[in-house]
Length: 482
Length: 112
Image (cartoon, rainbow over all chains, first blue to last red; front, top):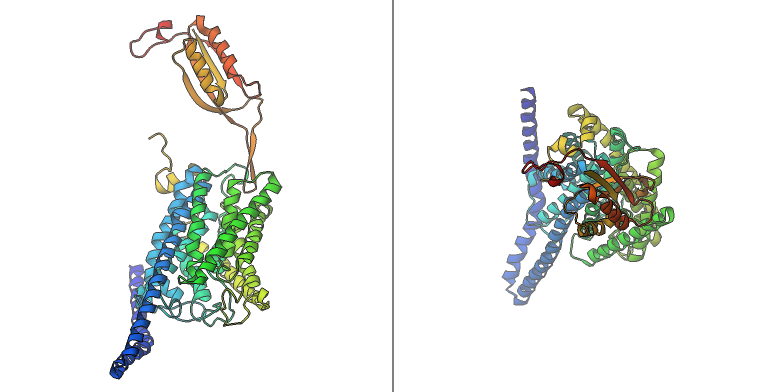
């Protein structure tokens, strides 16, 4: 009863905030509307047929551009969704033991559902509403004011609704990445509750800080420490990777780790998943140009080159170390390269992209094989080793290689990264990296404690041994005798 | 009646089966098994973690034979299952007390 009353109060408060925000939003929108309504009668009054024609032409040109941009952005949104399901679900699904296949796939799938609903209610607004330094506001709660009109702050040529649904797909995949560290031992209920809260407490502020108007780390909309993060090196990969490490340490090792063999049950699934991730990543990185522009092409090319280079460098490292190159190594390398190029994609030329890929493949190989073994944490599917490490190295190298020729984000002719002569950018990148690490570390730890108290986090040892598919979901991935 | 159990290399199975059919063997039970004798396994490496796989896939043939066929069958298997390398498997023979066909309760060698 007490709780019910409490919830009713909270809902009332939320609605009050939303309704207070309405006039604010209306005021912001009105000058532009007034300007356009004034301009059209004046041209007709002048009755100048040439001006009339020009105005019409203008409208058609911007309409055509909007159509082109919108088409690419909708496809990109779908590509990014494909990265979570089936991409990541298959990639992770193949890496676990047979008895945990459905459980890990289900976690990714559930996040698609849960984050989507939350995104519509408050998520989008917390990330992209308002202009505070740390977190957005409730201006767009319940998608208020999000429609066919573009939001000029973020993407001036596409409906804000397209921008909204595109950004949603990033919010979906980020918590899903963390499940790689908690795999094979975390309860379903605890996982969903933790990752839902994590989205609100860690993802939303970081997304706002880096991409939101007025955010502390925003590079083009008035941030104090302009951090270059084209498609989510800090927001997506450092945040999820570092949180994954905290989860792995908090949960402890899987029963039997590292003595008992835990080989991947189907590298074929992982292989398909990784290839889907690679393709989906074009939507992730090239889509982050938010237009069907030459910058999108540049990001597309950088993304592809880095992935290929990293697949080669991971494989080469393996070949030198073990005398053989493995399929798992090649696909892991490609993913590491994709992670590392994510912050850099829209800032670097193809040659630096190759360098970033080469470095990331070898670095992540070393993190996953050596560093993990030295410290002995059980990051089951290497969410930290690939996303945390790859995201960090990528964010740093973005500061080195970002070029004003590719993307003059600080204004025409102004140096962007170290190779332009602006070495101070590496300092900005470091601030961004540290804040993302700090936010992920503290936020995750606090949330794990809370969720541990509410639902518990870890499956019992018996459940773990029997497998999460049967104990958490009451089904099996492979009923080969049926 | 003798029971013959032969553990063989999976790659030799087709030749063994064809040769047995030629000497008049019509029934057998085959199971996919894993095991090892003197043959060493191999190591697999997944992201730097090394696993030794020492149980290797083999096939186990089981058949119960009338006494007069035992030597022919053993010779046939020896000839066709052999690759000459460690890991070719083994043949075990044991005496069988009784055989009963479930369909018509026939007993003895005529049930085979």
